[in-house]
Image 1: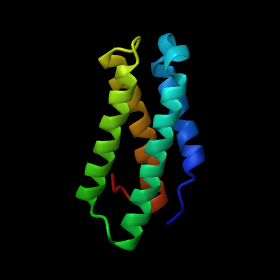
Image 2: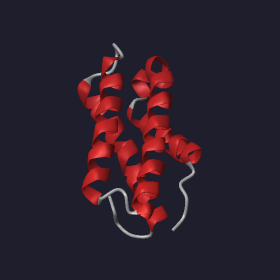
Image 3: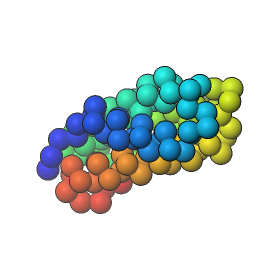
Image 4: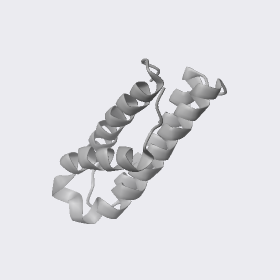
Length: 110
């Protein structure tokens, strides 16, 4: 089992998000960066909780869903970003996050 580098994960997710939000990037960049950092910290918490046996798969999915919904709400609240663009961006970030968590844990947990 490996650790999750939250800083690198946030940067990787930010790159995925930027591709989905390129028409709106100037308006959303600071918000997107903050939200990707929160999602990356969530991934690290999931990895630690799973390793300690204190977090079930169901709990991890709920935790991830809660943070993803919060991040989507922030991006959607930025005036120039629509709901579909925000959802596409969060989905891209979650794909990166799931890959990192599953790789760190060593099996498909999320």
